[in-house]
Image 1 (cartoon, one colour):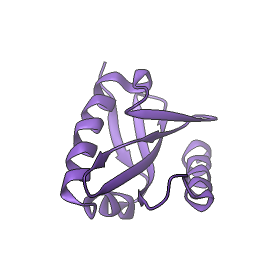
Image 2 (image 1 turned 135 degrees about the vertical axis):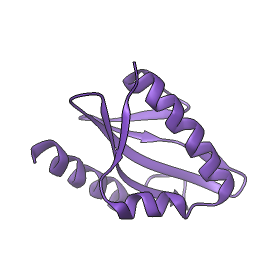
Image 3 (image 1 turned 90 degrees about the vertical axis):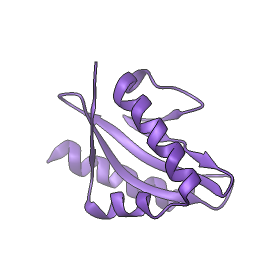
Image 4 (image 1 turned 45 degrees about the vertical axis):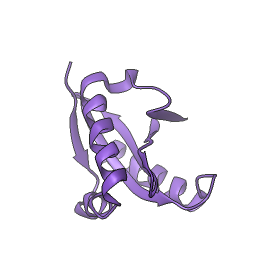
Length: 108
């Protein structure tokens, strides 16, 4: 059961690619797990935020990355937003942006 990864916008992929190399390597590993396991991927790799929004949780010595994603019909995963965490909690603006983008891909 293989899922297909898409990005909301080219900018999201660019943001991920600009991460420190160790965080990016962990992200690549987690994406492979996501492709293989889909919605069955759980903590510590992935966390549900409710209403169909999830976060991928890559980390490395140089920081912690977060990539919000959702599932669409046809085994499609859309990475909506990605950033490097600078604090313990996920900032509200990051979460709001991911939810807004999820509405866009779900409705249109």
